[in-house]
Image (cartoon, rainbow over all chains, first blue to last red; front, top):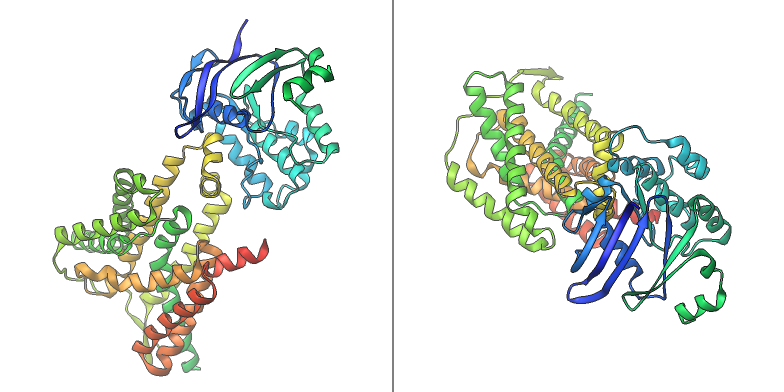
Length: 213
Length: 283
């Protein structure tokens, strides 16, 4: 069983403020894994620590069989981790096309498959010359995913991909992300409290308990 | 007719000077937010290197290129060793760049024989004009066009703009932002060196010559704001009209006073400069 990503007892946070207090999870090749939990429990902190924008306090991150605790964000991106942050963070005064061009920086060779990106998100072709800052939230989300795609990643980290986006586009994006069985981790107070399969996620009662809705 | 030509020449000369003198400063400020008080010293460094190389027998264009490259390399070393550690402390970076200027002044500290203005002169309506200054006008325009092509039509330029807009996100897409900053600072320093080299043949070299350029370049950048093309370039054009107009009307001194009054008015009305105002208005 080859793990694409293996996180062991990860601790991290902002300054002296611990947010993640021992998170462990695994993502296998070709798997879709969701991390769910209430606001403020550390989902975004986890994502930022995984891409390397926040330092690892303790524990270990392994990517493609290599420990990357001390590896910089730009080197992790070039190793094949694509990052789609909360709030999208498209480069606002660059055009759509230029945003994708910057995304190519992460490539380890070969030519990017623009046809595939445009097939997934036709709007990016239509708006190629428009400034990214003038796109709607959903279009920016598609651009952020497209920008990660042209980098040819082996692992994509999507932070709140559906936040603030109209439902029709969320469905569209979800259809594009969904390839295999979904699996989930539930995070609470900086720890993983449950590991759940796709059938559990359909169980409304369990989900309500985990999220304490 | 000859009066019109005279005014156009004055305008073109002022515009060329403002553009050439300020581009290096504008790039370092606009792209990195660093107020580079060593700008004048990069200019001086370019001028001294140019004259030294020319006196060794190198053709002037090559000597100017050498001056620009030397200033650029020194700029990259300065960024790597000092400026890099001060990005989160803008005031400290000002002091550091100023400190660098004092060091350079102590090391050089001598006056140098100039090389004389090349290309001779031509006459329109009884007045004689320097051909070299017309060449400088062409170079100023060429410089703006080249920088535009670089920042908007090359991969490296687009990545530099991305880095300036969202440095963290640029890192997360694989951009080596440290390298971008070093190269950007180097480019700014090289442009300052180019300014020194280009104007070296028109002046006597003294170690404090950078100061001659400082007022004009700071005025241009302050009025222009952070964006080179929406800010510094139009600011240079406006200031050139004001300076050549005031100079033609009341003489050199009033040209300078006109610039300073314009700055005071612009800071009061448009604190973000021209580009801040244009971009702010579009949001």
